[in-house]
Amino acid sequence: MAEATLNIFRGDSTNGKRVDYKVDVTPGMVVLDALHAIQGHQAPDLAVRWNCKAGKCGSCSAEVNGRPRLTCKTRMDSLPLDRPITVSPMKTFPVIKDLVTDVSWNYAVNKKITPFTPKKDTDWKMYQQDIDRVQEFRKCIECFLCQNVCHVLRDHDVKDKFGGPRFFVRAASLEMHPLDVADRVPMIKEELGIGYCNITKCCTEVCPEEIHITDNAIIPLKERVVDEYYDPILRIVRKITGAKKA
Figure 1 (cartoon, rainbow, N blue to C red):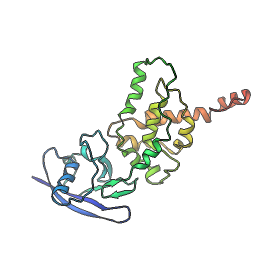
Figure 2 (figure 1 turned 180 degrees about the vertical axis):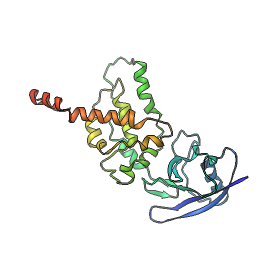
Figure 3 (figure 1 turned 90 degrees about the horizontal axis):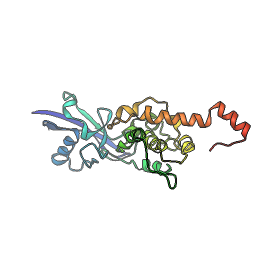
Figure 4 (figure 1 turned 90 degrees about the vertical axis):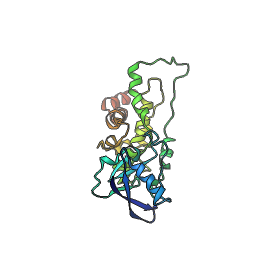
């Protein structure tokens, strides 16, 4: 039976250290299984957040060998076992204990977004292509791996000015909904700070649901902001007519 060494962060946001644990690797084992084995036999006080163990709740996000992943979807046999496997909490958020981070900031950002707002007495009929367009965004499981890997949040920590890719996905799911009539473009520009994103596509690369965050959500939203605020022809029309931006 193969054996693996997991090098795990232990501690909180003020103090911590890395500790090695050895586990037997069984067929089909994922990193979350290894963490549970360590909890069960070596370190019962190891803090790990998880729920479904099926890749659908987004709870078990961590950094494995430096890459943001769901530990329940990261197979042990996909990792090199000839050296320690590092397991760390998500870097972008404050550590509560061990591998558990405080992601509550994300829920505060979510409250800024105007909810679904259909026209009154509307006919609830949609074309299939309209449904397909927004359905992709509904696949998000809020694992916040995209938030964690985004360099605007991770390296520059501008959480007071930037919402992050997860909430551009949410905004896109509403803005592109065929029955929604709310105007979120000013909020996307000012409160979510979409201008800070320089479309490196790192968020798309780590999404476990394979949502095309950059191409299908962020870039179309950027285009809407440009159309609203920086289109020279629209500026001339507004100047002539005296119309103001929405």
